[in-house]
Image (cartoon, rainbow, N blue to C red; front, side, top):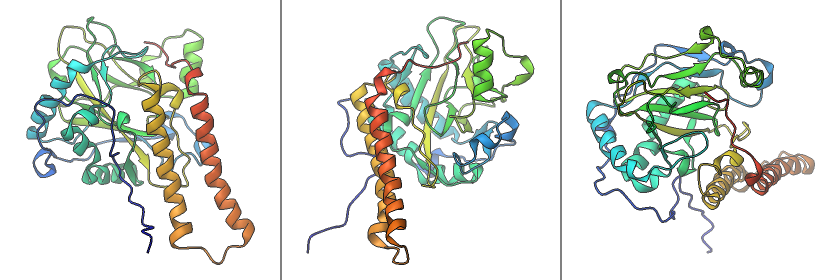
Length: 332
C-alpha cells in the first residue's frame, strides 16, 4: 500500500549554509533549566487594549515581569555558546549588532528553543498552548551591546511575531544601563506620540527588575511596544529572543514578512515563512483527512476549505509584497 503517512518536522531537515560554532555543548533540560513563575503579569487591558484585539489572540495575558528559566549551569552553557556566536553579528536599521539563525549554528540553542518543557511552562503562564515558532531565524535571535556606549540596543518597536521571550544571557546587575522597557499603552498610542514628536511620559514606561542572567520576560510581542536601552558604561550585554506561535488554529497568524526581509536574507525569509504557513494549513487539513466531519453539508465543507485557501492566498500576497516595506520602529 502507498505510504500516505506524512512525517512533519518542527525543525527543518535542510538549512542555509551557516558555519556551526566550534564548541557546542549538549542541552540537558534536567541540568540547564530552573523554571520559575513571574511575580506579576500584565493583561492587554493593562496596556490599554480593548475590543480591537478580540479574535486576534486566545489570551488576555500581555506580558510578565522577569522570571527564571536557566539554572546556573544553563547560564554558563548559554554564555559559552552566545559568546562564540558574536563572531557572526550583522546589523539592520533597528539593531546595530545581532545574530540571526543561531539555531542553525548551535544544537544547544536549537534544543533549548524547541524544548517541550519550556514551551509548556510558558503556555501555563500565557494561559494558552504555545508551540515553538517553526521559523528558525525567529528562534535564538541574539542582541549584543552596540559598539558605541550610550546607543540603544534596540529602538521602541513591536515584534514581527505573536509571542516571544527576551532572556538576559549576561548578568544585567553588573551593567550601568541596558534596561529592558515596556510602553504602558497601545501600538496606536505609541505611533501617535512618535508622529507628534512627543516624548514618552515617564509614568508610561515599565522597566521590569532584572535579577540576573537566565531570567526572561514573556510577552505578546506584536501588541506590547518595548525597547532595550543602551549602556551608560562599557560592558557586555547579550540577550536571546525566542519566538512562539499559538497552537489554537482559530487564531489568525501574525508574521510580519515585510519586516523580516530587513533582518534576514529574503530567500531565507520566504522559505521559513512558507514552511510556517504550510504547517498551519497541514494541521488544519489533518482533520479533513483523518476524521472527516460526515455531519457537515457541502457548503459547510466548502467554507472550511475556503478558510484554508484564504490563509494560503494571504501568505502569497505577503510574500509578493515582502520587499516593498520599510522597517518600522518608533525611534529611541
